[in-house]
Image (cartoon, rainbow over all chains, first blue to last red; front, side, top):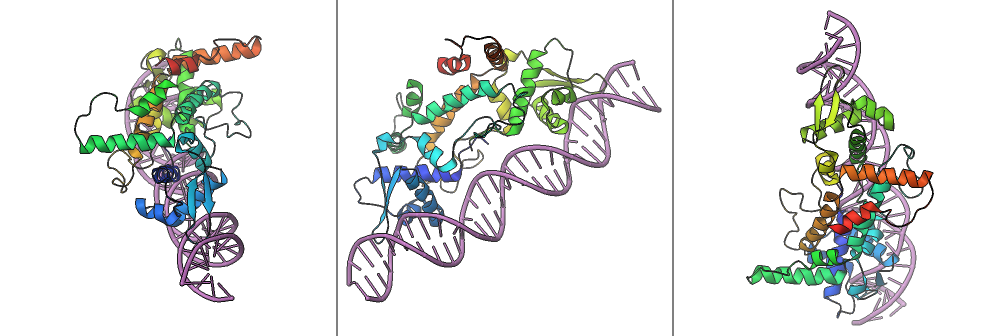
Length: 161
Length: 161
DNA sequence: TGTAAATAGGACACAAACGGTCGTATACTC
DNA sequence: GAGTATACGACCGTTTGTGTCCTATTTACA
């Protein structure tokens, strides 16, 4: 529970992959799916949603594919999750349109709404470029050796808000 | 998505209710269920899990019920959610026991693990007593009038980590 | 101009999770 | 011993998540 869906996972992976290949004219859903062993048709749909949401630009036809519509530094994890999984609330009631039937009795809604905001802020502070950077550091750390200090950029990012 | 289950909601509400009635010798699942119009049997199960997890103490038989096993200030929202919904991960893979089959290709796992930690920290900073306090303030604000300054205790809590 | 490769998107099938109920056993009080 | 409460396993219907299939459309290139 309180977990990301696979779709959101795939979406983040795809964006990260596109960010790492920004020099390419465009990459197809198939290219990305093969790189990560993701079901191609499923990924295609995800990329379509991201396109509809304005995070990607698509190009149909031969040699077509997708490119980031903005710099990787201007796309946040929050936007990706929002695009794929829709708005999220930490309370199970309050689906956005109308409040739950417990409205009058549910006394934790307001407190938890603030928690939701805090979590949103964390996700808004994570950029696709951070994923690239963080992963690069992790790989180097694994291949190389010393794992000391300042190796948790994302934590720092989350704390810096 | 990324939302709390109703069970976790109910659990938090119940703990808050118990915290508000700490002077009572014990409250039954039925008492609490009626107060919030929650299905009694469902709430009973939730309270049983919380008991098993050590957050509540139960007492069977006539005039039985539940009491907090600790002070409301020593129980966090994180523990409640963990007890009811199990461990949560922001990545859909990595269910705890073994990593997903994408292990080698999934390059965002490590970065997102840090995000999970940040969110956990937020939830760990929320105590049941905060829910009580925060709700009290909200009610007063609604009944009374002025809504200025320092009215977002939970946000402050989340930020103070 | 035709073919192949790509996006776009609706419909559907399967599986897992969630929400809730039922029945029964057990513990405790009076 | 009766009544009330917790403890817990089994079950069921609904929803959500994951993935596939099929068709239409766009585009590049031979």
